[in-house]
Image 1 (cartoon, one colour):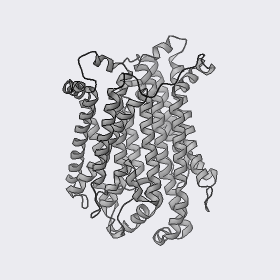
Image 2 (tube, one colour):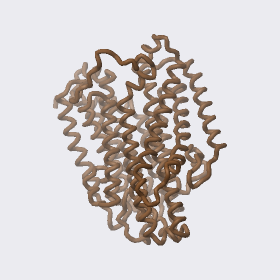
Image 3 (spheres, helix red, strand yellow):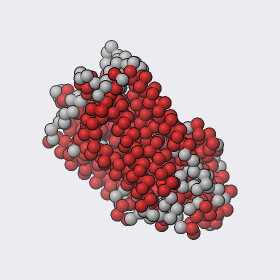
Image 4 (cartoon, helix red, strand yellow):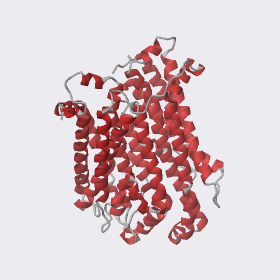
Length: 539
């Protein structure tokens, strides 16, 4: 076909550009998904089977976080089903996020940056670059599936040493990654620029995540209507219940969406979407006359979207508190473990709040990373030079980005807290606002630390700011499974979340919090000095 002319050449060029990135991607995903397999054996002994079954299978709050399992007997809830339930959804989401970012950056973002027009000036088919990206993504996920399956198999952990189960786990997560890459590709044709396409794709992912929380707790069969739920509904490692249908559905849906993306792209012009760009005002607002006003105006849609998303997610998580109360009152095993219903309620709700707020704060940290990395994104597009042509110092620009990011992150965390508080007000054992505010607010300290790390990258290695996403993924992994796996102390100490006081189950540690804040400020100052002295980057 004429539209596919020179696809092979584009694919070779793409591999030459990305081979280092692809290798890092494979090993990073391998470390994320397979590293916990060996440790799972230590954490899930037969003596703890009934406790883990009650906590992760019968507890609706944990089901909402991790997804359901078809295991109906505590004695059958062994290493395999535990690993399958706790790891499948989070691994699928991680694969999906990276695929979304990569596909949009290599397709629509290159149009925004003018690279696509450069390609089109040569005799290259209109779909050649897109097809090259698709081929690369297919091969990448096949490699990841095989490497992931055989790496788990090589650890020879009892319950995780069935090659068929390992292939199912690896295939379902890789199929989700490819499917979400195709969804991102399709939406990239519709929206007017890469930022809105990326935001819409992540918004859809978040919406389906919230929807699956409700169906998993009440009507798990409805999950088959949710593409995101196809990942864990394959039930890897649940012997007798494993189902490859989810993998097949993900691949079929990906092909359908890819066909739609091709039809949309072949009929549109370069650097134009089907949705029109919003028209500008004839006269600029007064807020645009200030640097903070300009930055907020440029990012307002993304900021408002994140504010709304974390508030809604707070409402959803808040609805879990009433279900936990019912679970505790009806579960004799849990009451026996924690000695009494009152103690059980306090302990389980406290631990749930720690897990909940740590995960929410990681989401807010991701929001902060997106905000602050706009600093280097604008620099790459030579837009910072236009600002520096005005009487604006580097100190002012740097501090404006940093302060804006910190305040926006704090507001986002507060909105999540507010959503949780409002939703659980009608419960019999409803928490007061201070009981929700204190354990939720303390995690802002960790968010500030992540911002300070990113500020160092922006100032010293601006082209490698994407490294921070690896740390975000590490924090997410530790927050989800750090309390389950018997991980080495040195690994746990690499997570800033390990040092945050776990309110309300721990006492406040002002000394540690103060040290983290002082260290964060020191790193930001060092970054400021370095930013003043380094050259601007281009391209």
